[in-house]
Length: 244
Ligand SMILES: Cc1cc2nc3c(=O)[nH]c(=O)nc-3n(C[C@H](O)[C@H](O)[C@H](O)COP(=O)(O)OP(=O)(O)OC[C@H]3O[C@@H](n4cnc5c(N)ncnc54)[C@H](O)[C@@H]3O)c2cc1C
Image (spheres, helix red, strand yellow):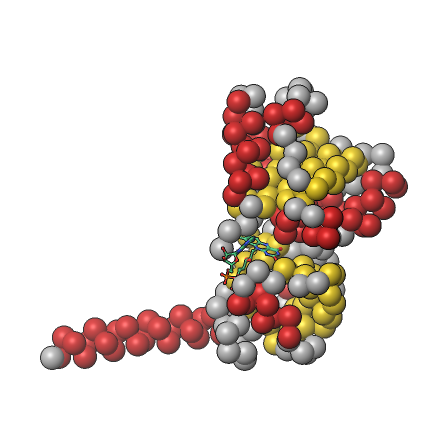
């Protein structure tokens, strides 16, 4: 019996320590803007204090939760749309795919939001392969980290392949078209339905190319398979799966 109380006590303490760490030590921000990008797809701006303790690089994702709202208290990952600056504003674009992502659409401005991050490997690959042109392949919500990468790297030669199920699913296309029209370094391909990676990759023969892929599993696998078939070194590509 004593052992039972000991184990129960230990479990309770461990649980409380985790809850305290998550609540007390995760950086806190407030929702300062909420706007529908389209039906069931919202943009959120969160203003965070003390951001200098956390580094959010272009292409990173963060985990967020809303500690004061039932149903939104578990951490969920979302990529960051913007190049986060000293103003401490983090912009997210979230599609309502399930319970968390739909409920978050009804938050009031001013709501307290906690986050953890940034996480991700896109920036590491970009830095390690300094000077390479970038090929970005993405679909659905996977476009989000690519926006931050394109914004942050006007000096790089970048080609984007962005696929959507229907034209109504596209987001930030006006922004992408504006960048493509004003930057000689950027080429944007937006398509309804899949690209054929093996065909597209034939245009990138040189070894000074880094491939970054984000989005659903099937999309990621088809690009990774084509890259392997072309014997592209593993250090030259990275796929970030958007499954949760
Ligand atoms: C690294 C990373 C970055 C991400 N960035 C973004 C982002 O910028 N914007 C964004 O909207 N989402 C993003 N996601 C996906 C997001 O985290 C999930 O959609 C969300 O956590 C699902 O929680 P939920 O409770 O709303 O849905 P759940 O109730 O857990 O899932 C509802 C249903 O939707 C399906 N589902 C879940 N995620 C997806 C998806 N991405 N695509 C299609 N179907 C899905 C599930 O299989 C399930 O059937 C990202 C995921 C990862 C891993």
